[in-house]
Amino acid sequence: MTRLVRIPLRVANSYLVIGEKTIIVDTGDPGYAKGILRALSKEKIDRRDVSLIFITHGHIDHFGSVFELKRSIDAPIVIQRHDEPYLNRGVQGPLYAKNRLAAFMKRIGGNFSVPKRYGFTADLTFDHQMDLQPYGVEGELIATPGHTLGSASLVLADGRAIVGDLLVRRYFLAGPPAIPPFLQDGRAFYESIRRLDELGVHSYYPGHGGQIKREEFSLKSNSNLRL
Image (cartoon, rainbow, N blue to C red; front, side):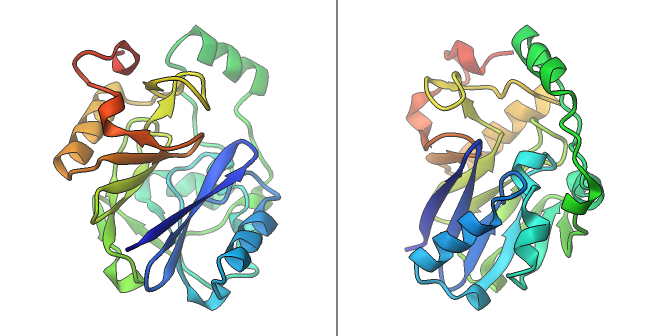
């Protein structure tokens, strides 16, 4: 069975997806490559067995350490094509505040711009789907826009999915499931959740906080998942 290892990196999560080979999902803010390398060592995974580095979307708290990590791991980087320009330039993708609290957070933090040295040109991009069998994992990458136009999820054949910021908890790390505070396309968000439903996803592993079970929310009745 494919193993998932969550690596909490201060604000955001990185994940190890361990099958015949290992895929790293997201790298956290700048300065966290060592934390990911320590996790690989703890799991007794040779760096040469890392087959892919997948970035869920173009926000700095998810790709900030990719440049540093590539110095130690010679694996291709993949991102959905719509968010690739932000990774390439090393800049924060746009933040679209869903409510007043999110707008306040954005004013405090600006657009979280970062120096270009944190950017990296992706080795691979995809549009709708990408098979992961060639990279030693039974699953696929699926475009799941909503939080950003280029957001994507890693969906395993057994119904688990790493979803970046597609889905969060109401109080960021705790509380019931909720729509992310920054949302570029509300209609696309619902279409993405429904698409994962159709694929049989039962466990969501978000970019912030712990696992979310499918039975924790309903698109029809849970107000936290209504715009």
